[in-house]
Length: 70
Image 1 (tube, rainbow, N blue to C red):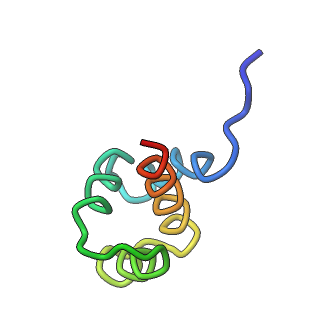
Image 2 (spheres, helix red, strand yellow; image 1 turned 90 degrees about the horizontal axis):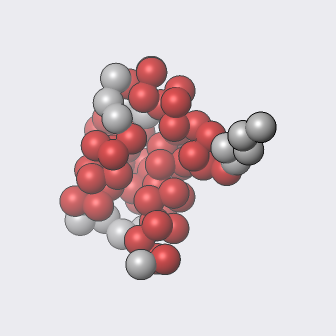
């Protein structure tokens, strides 16, 4: 039995399906942004790239957590 994906990563399949881009591309985009604060990046993804709030929030949370862990 496999463990169910939890947290922000649980949104990734629906993000890829809805927006047609792999999560890795969204993470690269987030990392290349001059913005650094969580909600600034979320709002940028929503306004410039048309993501919904939950999807943008999940991508930003996961990406920033990954970067912090490095």
